[in-house]
Image (cartoon, rainbow, N blue to C red; front, side, top):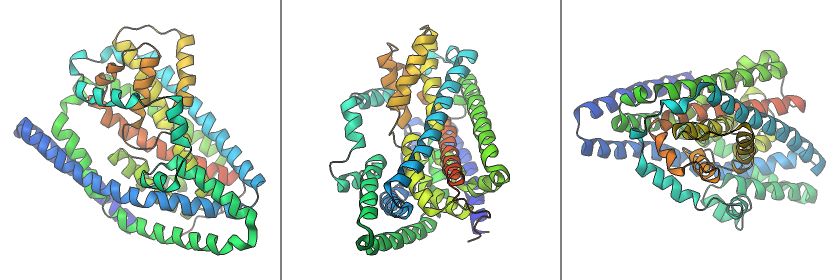
Length: 415
């Protein structure tokens, strides 16, 4: 009942956000609209900061405990191998689907060059200056776990936690008090999740109201075709993911979807799959996935298995090329796909992170990187769909690996 009530509040917040944002957009001046948007975003920031506050300790505690419970290095390697098999397959499928949809629909031809958000593009271009192999390595391997936790670098925390967990498992009996303490800490943090989620409706209202106040509903008219084809691609991706999920999970799939409905809605409305990481951890354990599998697979998924973002990268990059009338042959597109497959790994599940990769990829393939300005006005709404898809993909990955390992309980937990 409590979960259902929160879901209703979130839906109400979305509707109110659209209404209030549209009233401000229509009746207020541009200066007031920007002030309103900035103040509304504070509500979203509060919610996201509260979530980010508990992500680092949750990932560390649960992952170390999970690896310690998995046992030896051989088991860790086997489970990790199965996870990577799913991640790589899902990523390739997502990238190929994005490429297929953009080539069949040509959404770039519908983009009006006069609607470009040049200021936003310059900010993204600035971020791509740090985008290199050296920066990628620095992003993966932590020089200080405390710095990684302070900056919420999930992949760096995962790397440290894997080393720590494997070492704890190797030490054996002497490490049991530490593992037990971390297990208790993980349960305390998961209890905090329930308190933090009460702020979700405020975060949702702030996010929706801010973007509608600035862009208005007219943005859908200008970018209708682009958004329509992207939603079509996302729908096909969902269909494929759910079909594969059904073939493996069978009758358990509807129960899983019911469990993750609220995390999906929050990720969709806040455009951040990271925002629901703690809640998703809790719901997957309630679904029947063993905590040691969830603790190991889910943090990895947030770094390596962002299906919605992957599909959008090929879709957006090629759409920008189409908008500028740049022809790209099949070989070049496949090369771009492989580059995206590598460069996208490790991006955090936060709003617009994938656009930095798109901007860098455009520059690499002689597509004007400032072309990202063409898709920025509609990107918030695209981000809603790709964030929700990222959550679905990671929930399925965790559940499927649990089933492959024989660690999925036959009936879901009721607590």
